[in-house]
Image (tube, rainbow, N blue to C red; front, side, top):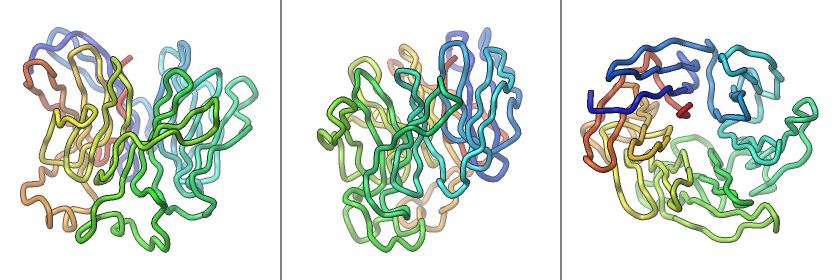
Length: 284
């Protein structure tokens, strides 16, 4: 393993063989344990607690020891993805309805508002992740403008057209989209803001970008991203769409895990995760 500062990572895995894993890296070795045995998507910290999203089970709140202290079921029709927290409110991506639901963390997780990117009650944008900093919301989505009559997930794979995925900047104060930060992206995920830069995965190209710069590429589907000083942690999933991806990439690594990558030296170590699809990564 490359030299890595001691740290703990929460890794959320979705769909088949999903779960929430704790990876404890210490003295260049690591230990792993499964914290939740349900498929999980978005994860974030809230005070000394953690908020975890599951499409099948809704919202989990875990204490500092990673024990479940609250669970609020939500409709499985929402197709829940990413989460961010600001001012005691949880902003949760409801992909099915092209929305971000706003839930009160002080009032029994009541849904109090929403941000909608399309009036359609079907997934036409595949909004998937978000990050909040200074009243600014950064959002990743597969299609902008919305893709009408989207009949299957495969329709997001742009064989003959320019990819329409974007990272948007949305003002929480003005309640409107300010601008498109980055566009023509092939399945963007895992947007985050760190040290005045935007980092995000371009999953369909197996990339991580910092602003417009490609800073990491592997041989599998990139989703799940965290940055801590000069350490970047990237999730790699076994893609559900290998036949389609093989039209663009001939060397796809069918292994699920995380890369621990030194941004300065560009050296990486890989840790296998016993799942199939990583969604989120959180340094704790």
